[in-house]
Image (cartoon, rainbow, N blue to C red; front, top):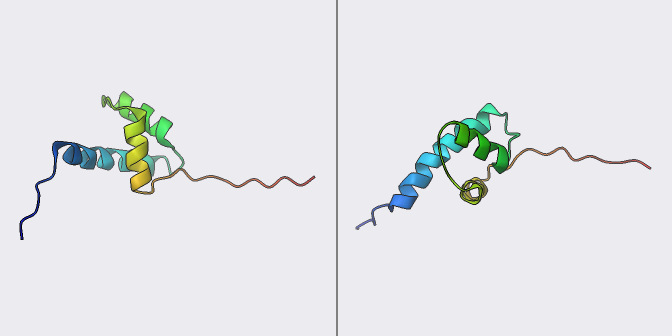
Amino acid sequence: MFKKPLSDRAIEDNRLLKLIKRFYVASGGTYGNPWIHADLREAGETYIVNRIARIMRQHKLNRWCLSITYVV
């Protein structure tokens, strides 16, 4: 029936998600939230790194990691 309108924070999170995805794809999926945060700051966006980490975690935008196996 009736849908609740999105809150201001949800609208801003959606806008921020688009920016995060743009920088994440540009990095080849290798940037984690500290680097994405730095890119956003250079672009003039001022957000706390924890907010960016939360959005990345919710949308499964984790940095790609190599698993290193050491042979002794």
